[in-house]
Image (tube, rainbow, N blue to C red; front, side):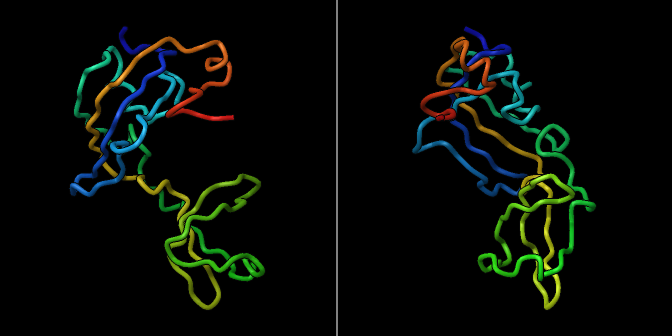
Length: 160
């Protein structure tokens, strides 16, 4: 069976950036599972996987535009440190949830001074060219429940 919209794909992956830094891998763990064509992985990788089959191995290079996007300097925000009083201690490098104009986002803490905390609302991999090594382990039709929920259930997928 070939990968197409609404296929459940299980795969092992290794991810690196242009500098060869390891950014993540499923090796040594359960393979990752996702519902193809439902925005569950970055668009550039999904395009590369269209039509592939179990057993295929591919190397895919995904541009920032087709990955996690271009870094947006408007995503850098300075927040009054007093807004975080009473919360757990915040340190540079932490990822925290913040409410920005009514929308909850995950932000990376990039700097802390006497008065302000600097947050980066960009995805940590924004601006990175992504280098994937993929081994497709399996392809199957999604269940009715998976289609209605928009994601895979069970090993390597989502659990309710």
